[in-house]
Image 1 (tube, rainbow, N blue to C red):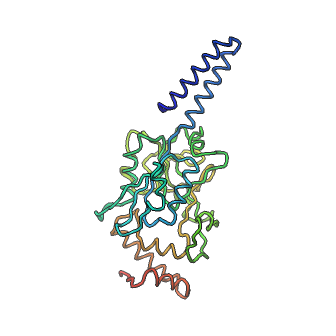
Image 2: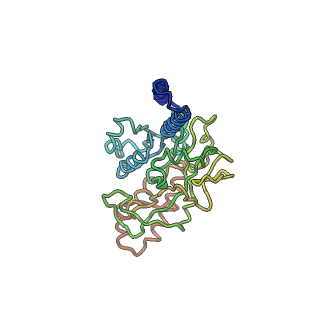
Image 3: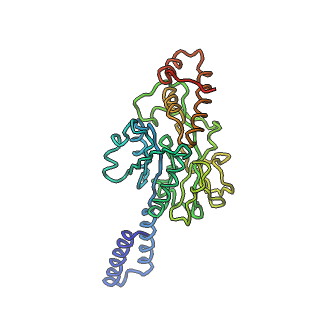
Length: 322
């Protein structure tokens, strides 16, 4: 319980004691019940939760992302800005949230080709902020947490007794994608794309929400951005124990929560996403993965005039490395 909560609780307790002195008919049991209720109320609503994210070329969606997590109760968002110096300025889209302290931007300029940006960001975020928050989530800008309607806020979800012994809550993806959308439209992505696929093989992927104040940084030796090393103390969104450390939870568990993952959005945006590279591998492997994906893209789009136009516009003069 924070100092602020302790002060409120102590003040409320003094009021109850004075009430008891003035009216001897007020039962001690009633007073005790009120005290316990007040204690539970303040501790439940005092859970502090932080979201750690890495962003590159996300200015079109960063405000919607921030507002979504503000609405469901997150206390802080730490964004690692992975843009190049000549790229967009995401601060312009969320300046008000930066000014009021809800969002903090950390510039991430990785020059060492062997460093994986997303791994670096997650390790750094947990190292810096785990002492200040009860829970830290590690989600991307194209991932929107959806919690069951029985929970008003994320704090209600995390206070569920189901998760009392969990150190890592692994939330499954649910892939949202409409393959018929070719171009970006200036609307919130959650309004634009409403189609999802329960059978998408990518749904087995999870992203993690990890307790703060743990004895060590469980992202330190991470092999994937999807899961920290918390064997036997991880659980799914239903509270079911997961007895292995993996970037997957099979079959996907959507009982109390899931991540709406807008994997590709429009075809145009997928092309831009492919061109910008990946943050979950080093630069050398990123080039290899781009090359393979670009060749596959050309193959699948052959004969489609509209898609060919988009590819030519975005990848003009692009060469394939054999």
